Amino acid sequence: MDRSAARSLIYNMLSLCYVYPDEKVYASIAAGEWIMEFREALRVLDGKTLDDYLRTIEQAISGEEKGEQPAMAREYTRLFINASPYVIAPPYGSIYLERDGLGYGKSTSEVLRFYHEVGFTLKEDLKDIPDHIAHELELMANLASEESQASGNEKIRLEEIQMNFLSRFILPWVPTFCQKVTEHSRSLFYKNLGNLTEEFINFEKNYLGVPEELNFLKENSPEIGGG
Image 1 (cartoon, rainbow, N blue to C red):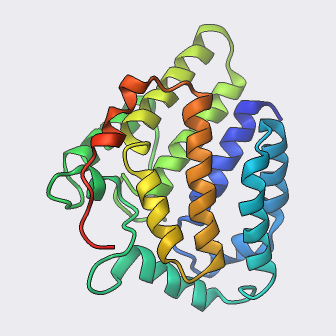
Image 2 (cartoon, one colour):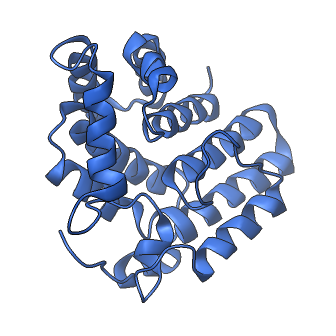
């Protein structure tokens, strides 16, 4: 496994963890085989700082939260879908990037246009809007996978596409989203998933060499209400 393939695997695993945990998704998460692959990818990337969060996630799915698909589904719903009086951690970029704090705005259309330009097709079974975090992480997984098979100018082009998408559509909101998940989750799984995702995104910012001038949206993006 090379570094690009390792990054692709991590993005794919994180994407899966942000999909609603119906029985099929929960079975994939609870089986735990992905933990070993994730850990191997971290070794390739020398990501020792991320392993503590992965270890706690492993403990959650093999210990007190094992066999608790309804409980995980309830917590997913509480965090990401319909808590009262407001959704705790909306998993949509537009909620954080639009001045009115509403979903499916201009930024969503820009994400969708980016997907079309790079030939990325949304999974129909997710049934969610284009700037859902699971979609955005999956796109990065696909691009990193393509990069692992490329060389020369094509490899450089794919790296630039990844840097562009990360700086425009992930860095401006995903760290804030992750902090909300970590702060408010009642589940060890989601609490540490938030930490793990935030740390990996920070790793990616450095790995891809995102220039500071491309990171201005993160510092200037509007905060959403509540929480």
